[in-house]
Image 1 (cartoon, rainbow, N blue to C red):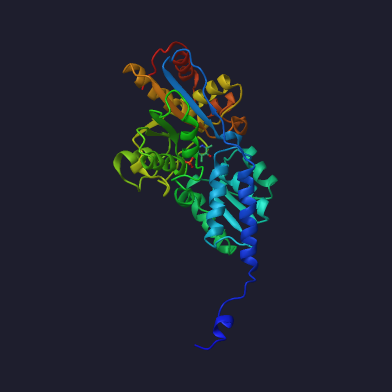
Image 2 (spheres, rainbow, N blue to C red; image 1 turned 180 degrees about the vertical axis):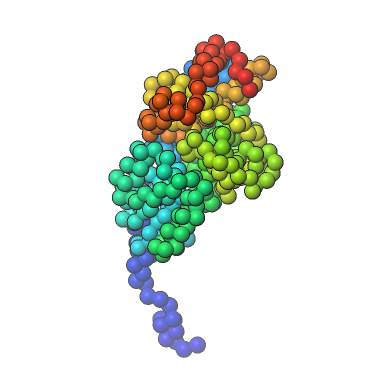
Length: 369
Ligand SMILES: *Cc1c(COP(=O)(O)O)cnc(C)c1O
C-alpha cells in the first residue's frame, strides 16, 4: 500500500458540520445544566388518610411543559444521528406543547422551525411558537398533521422531528435523568419510597413508555396506569390489541390521539382507565384551586385517574402512595377549560363531577368508578 494513502485517503480534520454539532450539543446540555429538578408536590387531602398523592410538576420547565424534556431529547437524537445540521429546517406535527419546546430549542440553535398543528390549538401556544421565531401551519383535523408535516419537511429538504414515532426511542429509558429516574429518586426518602401506582395520560405515549420500562428495569413493584380520554384510540387499542384502531380526536390538548401512536408501548401498561372530558376538566379545576394556580386539562385527567385508583384502595382498606404528573400550566387554557362559555358551547357539565371529587377529597365519600 503506497505510503501517501494514509494522508490522502482520510478526510482532513476540518468539518464545519461536526463543529456546528459540537457547539449545538454544548448549548443543549447547557440548557439542562442550568435547570433544577422539577418539584414533587404532596398536598394533604383530609378525606384520604393513609393515601399519599404526589404530583411531579412538569409545568416549571423553561417552556412550560413536560415536552421540554422530549424536545431536548429529539434535538440530541437528530444531531447525534447526523440528521440535523446548521442549515436544517425542522418540521413537527404537534398539538402545541411539543412545538413550543422545539421552537425554543430551534431558536437557541439558530434553526428554522415549522409547526403543523390543529387550528384549535390554544392561542397562548401559537404566540409562544411565534415568539421563538417558529412558523405555524394549521390543519383542520388532528389526523392531518402527520402527512402535512412530512410533506413540508420533504419540500424544504429539512427534517421531520416526528415526536409520535421518536419519543420512545429518543429518550434514554434506563436513566440519564429521565422523568422516571427523577421521580423514583425523589420518592427515595419518602415513607413509601416505592409507589403503588404511577398514573399518566398518553399523547405520544413516550412518557408512559419511559416510566413503564424503568419500573421493569429497576425491578420495582409499582404498577403503571395510563389514563385515556374521549375521542382517543389508545384505550380501545390496549383492550383489543388492535394497533390499527382509530378515533375522531380529543378535546384535551396534549393527550388522546386519533391513531395509536408508534411511541405508545402497550406491553408496559398494567391498567388503563378512560376518563370523561367533564371529569378531566372538573379535576383540573379542583386541583388548580387546591394548588392556588392553574393546571392544564391533561393534569386533570391524570388527577381523576389517581382518584379512581385511590377510591379502589379505600374500598379494599389499603394505604399507599400514588404518583402522577402536572403536565403543563392551566394558564394556556383560559379560553377553554377555564371558560364557562366554552364549556357550555361544548355541552360539558362539570358540576356533578366537581361535587363528587370535592366530596371524595374532603370526606372520603366514595367516587363512582
Ligand atoms: C404531550 C403531553 C402529554 C402526554 O405526554 P406523552 O409523553 O406525549 O404521552 C400530556 N399533557 C400534555 C400537556 C402534553 O403536552
